[in-house]
Amino acid sequence: MPELPEVEVCRMGVKPHIENQQVENVVVRQKQLRWPIPDEVMSVKGQKVKGVERRSKYLMLVFETGTVLVHLGMSGAIRVIDKQTPVIKHDHFDIEFSNGKVLRLNDPRRFGAVLWMPDHQDIDGILSKLGPEPLTEDFNAEYLYKKSRNRKIPIKTFLMNNQVVVGVGNIYANESLFKAGIHPEAQAGNIGKKRYEALTAIVKEVLAAAIKQGGTTLKDFTQTDGKPGYFAQELLVYGKAGKPCPTCHTPLMEVRQSNRSSVFCMSCQKK
Image 1 (spheres, one colour):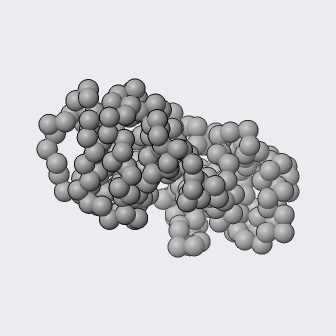
Image 2 (cartoon, helix red, strand yellow):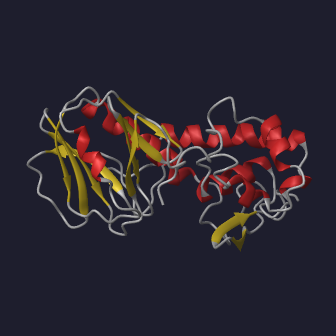
Image 3 (cartoon, one colour):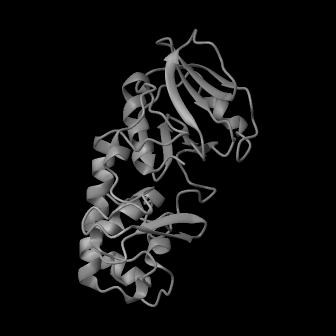
């Protein structure tokens, strides 16, 4: 699944091509994605894109009368391509622009979404339940410490909860907890403020590095220009169970948490 850095890289990739461009046509080839594409999306024809933003893993195309939300789901990818580019399998949704470019959503599993916020109002509560963005000042040690009190769930599960903080997916949670020296099964409520200070700083550092380097290479995701990301080459523990810890050389362990892989070092990461 594309995580926050991949979606941010996507936003940066498409913005120069579509911002301030007028929509000539909207094409829906497959209406039924995770939710049906609302008919109101067609209303952007004739309007210009005023901004290309992101909230959590939602790409936000801002128009005069409302905002189109695009979520990539498990396997979705967005391209900005020339209008004459042939349609391929799973190309479900296009926005065609007057500059000859097309924003095209390809989603083999159809777990993605194209949604509409009239007058930019979150009437369905899609965004209102989300926690703060991890790269903003709202995500800090004081906030995370207070949010974690009396919580008996594992810290990795807590960190991946979008109502706590958005966009810290499995890969980046693994990496951040390793760098912070925190065992993924440690109870969130038992972790002290000093360790949360280290963890919040490291989460910001890890995500910022991923965005800078173009997002993590995932088999179901490529960037808007078709090139894979490069951050996967620098992952310290994710996907490396059984290999030596990069710090102490103890073999890395792996457990399943909420059906996701957690890789950690028994020596370096403490509960």
